[in-house]
Image (cartoon, rainbow, N blue to C red; front, top):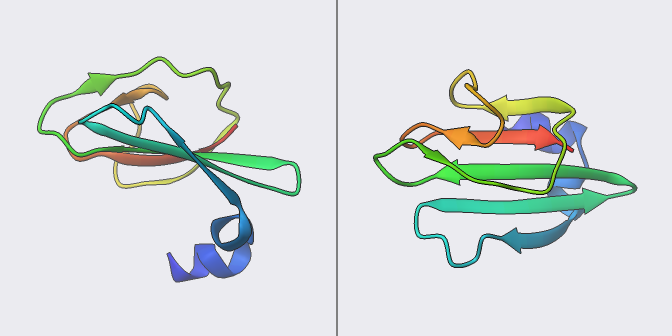
Length: 83
């Protein structure tokens, strides 16, 4: 994570925007910096969840599991995507 932070200023300087603010299972937000946007999705529940989001995923940056689908998260899964 430290290497990711050092290599990508979006992690430090990116504008933060909370998504799905009423969702009790999924913490989702974007970071935008110099024309680039990253989408961060974290499932804090013990169930698999799928959410609808208005983004086209272009690349996976990092995650704690191999993704099944971009907006489907298994229990306690976290993914970061470029959009």
